[in-house]
Image (cartoon, rainbow, N blue to C red):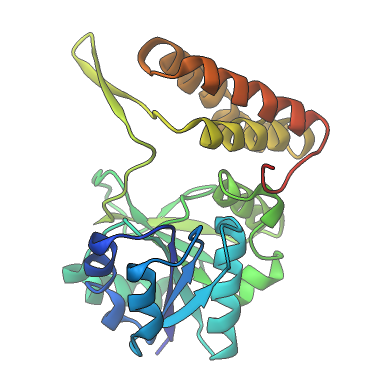
Amino acid sequence: MIKIGSCTVLYNPDSSVISNIETYSSLFDICVVVDNSDSINEFSKYFEDNPSFVYISMHGNQGIAAAINAGVEYLNSKGMDFVLTMDQDSQFPTKEFEKIYSLIEKYKDEYSLIGLDVNKVSYDQEIKDVPYWITSGNFVNIRDFYMVGQMNESLFIDYVDFDLGYRFKQVNLKIGYLPGYCILHTIGNPIEIQFLGKTFYALNHSPIRYYYRYRNSYYLYHYVDKKFFKKEYHREIFGSLIKMIIFEKNRKEKLKMIKKGIQDAKLNHLGKFE
C-alpha cells in the first residue's frame, strides 16, 4: 500500500478554506498545510493549533514553488511515497477517493505524476498521457520529484507546473491524468465571453500575476526550450493578452507589469518581484 500525504498551500485563508480542506484531509496519511500568507490570521491559527494538520509557516509569501518544496520535504522525512498538491480553494472529489487511490496504486510505477481532471471530458482509457499538468490536484512521486530537482523556486508562482513537467520529460518520466475524476479549480478571476455561440474566458488576473505569467513564459520559451513551451507561450501572447486588452479593466497597469516581466526575463531577473 502506498503512503500518500497531502500538501495544501495557504495564502491569506478565510473560513471557506478551512471547510474545504477538511473535506479531504482525513483521506491521507498526513495533511500538511504550508502558509504563504502575508500575515497570520485567525484561520491560519486554526491550522496551526489543530493536531490533525501539520502546519508550516513560510513567514510571508515565498511563492508556491518554495511552499510545495517545504511541504514535500516534511512528507519525505515521514516516509510518504506520493504527495497530493492542492491550492487552498481547489475542491477534491472526496466521494471518488477509493477509485482514485486504486488507480494511483495501479499506475504508481509507470507514472511519476498523476493529475486529476479539470474538464471532465470522457476518454476510453483510464489514464491519459500529457507533457505537463496544473499544480493543484497532482499526485507526485516524491522520489522522482527529488530526482528532477523539486519545484523551481526562481519562477516563484506561474509556470512552475509546466517547468516541472519539462524536467520530468528530460529524464523520460511520464505524466498522466485521470479522465473524469475532477477537481473544481478556478484560474484567475475569469470573465465570461460569448462569441459566435461559444464561451471563452479572460483570466482577469491582478497586475502582479500578469508580471509572473509573462516573465516566466517568456523566459522558459526563449531561454529553456522553444519547442516544449511553444504552446503555452503563444497562448499568452496571442490569446490571453488580446482578451485582457479587450475585456478587462485596469489594462494600463496590467500592460505595464507585462512589459516589466518581459524585461526582467530578458535580463534573467527571476525570483520574487520586489
